[in-house]
Length: 82
Image 1 (cartoon, rainbow, N blue to C red):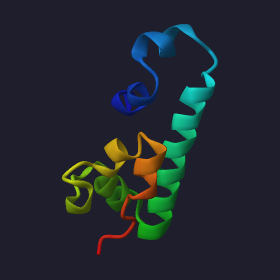
Image 2 (image 1 turned 45 degrees about the horizontal axis):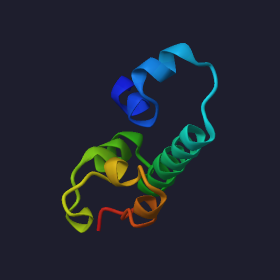
Image 3 (image 1 turned 90 degrees about the horizontal axis):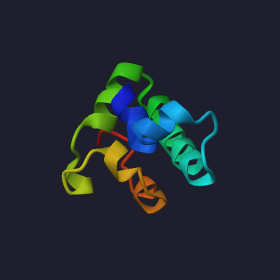
Image 4 (image 1 turned 90 degrees about the vertical axis):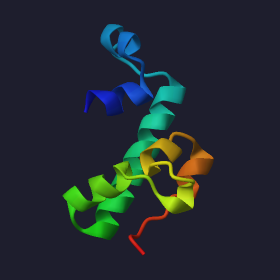
């Protein structure tokens, strides 16, 4: 879990601040939106999390969570196992 949090907000920043910047909030919302979408489509939280963390051939071998760090990347994430 810490690795996921720290991919959005650096550890030192996370430990010293109580509020996120606008950019950090945007990244947090984007990742939460992708996680919620995939969990809803898969209807199985464990499988959805596995999908999000597994390299995908349509993403040039990157994981969906890695690609979702940008808005453009979040728009191309395949959301079904097919």
